[in-house]
Length: 224
Length: 108
Length: 277
Image: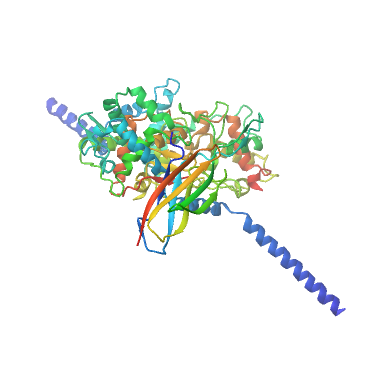
């Protein structure tokens, strides 16, 4: 009797586990190759410069995003997980949410430099900083830009920020929203093409605030 | 290593009186003369200056070039084919180097 | 009185006409971003006429091929046979026990038949990287071997299990987010939407035929560097822009990506050299 009960529970347990296993197997079986093999091939493809080996480590969100070819193909649980993880990864400037300097932001938006290194040449200096925003966005009217991301022309005007309401709590809340997107785009758009500039340190919180000011300030050329 | 190498391409055969296109591409850096804004040092530049087209040893076309032409220039010149023979280009640059290259054409 | 009205009316009309003409002329000179981009693409199309300067590298490559004893090198069709070699690469080579693409195979043959060490091969490969108007022998050899397959259709054998394995690995790497800017190949080169980065239209591995058009013209002569760009140099430059670590030429990573790209491009006619900005 007890043996039968035990066997029955075991059977139920196994049946319960196998669909989950199968689902996991399905993604791996479609691939046909193990992640360890992929990782080994990837590692062998880079120069073993100890300064840059950290770049090959994937963090949890990157690992999740690598499994799906695009945002649309992601199941809701994965989307939730990435949003949860990334909402914890946002830092604000020392003086909190306040309007920065849009002239500095303009320089950062236009510069394509920052972080590129190759041992055979064309390396950016450590003092080069920039977001290369024109590669994917249209920002100022008349300046050629890319179409990978949404157009940001007259962003502040379209968002309804004027000289009168820019220092009210609602205005600062709008600044905070844009700041968060630039700092860590995945907190609102998981696995998007946009890099998480602030989270990785490509741009400091103050620099991100300057860029957000450049996009939203009524005096900035974007909104004129 | 091979600055000044050229490829000359003409149709192998042509009708008498037909206007053909002599295409050529020459490897050359074509760097313009430059004055460094910081130090004031001048470099004279390195570019092709003259190209002459000979059809059966008769000069038919002469072209003066300067640094405004881009590197590894592609040049196409029209030529009226009237007798079989050799199409030759002779070209020189501002450092005094001179090269030539031939191509043959049969005219019916 | 009426005469004065008439002359002032004519004068006013003339002024308005003149101002209007100026406004139209000013608009004519100022190009919208779409116009500018259209002109850049027109320039790219015009560049495709005439003789490609990359063909001169093929002539240099013919001599360098013999100089480095590469006529003993088997590209899959027999020692020294290069007609159609590019069309069936990457493939598995039992003598090297690896799947190899064209450049990796040239690197291996240089070690075997020209007595170079792996470090010397790497230096030989990278002799023109980062330079302009560089008449390098390696680029010349790759150009010479690639041009011999002009007109043939790419035909990577994806049924071979080793090649299939490399194809799958390449596909996973294509979609693997990595590095401090979270980039992978798919950020730019995948998706159904037609996008452009600044003024350059991007090809997508998901839209049929585009990967083939991009890949079947390599090595590509670049007008801005006045020299040809081979596939591995292109990978290296892409990875530099993606803020990935520096690429190691002739590695398994290159073979995996080549297998994925050439495998996706199966059926495209090879048309080397291509020409680009």
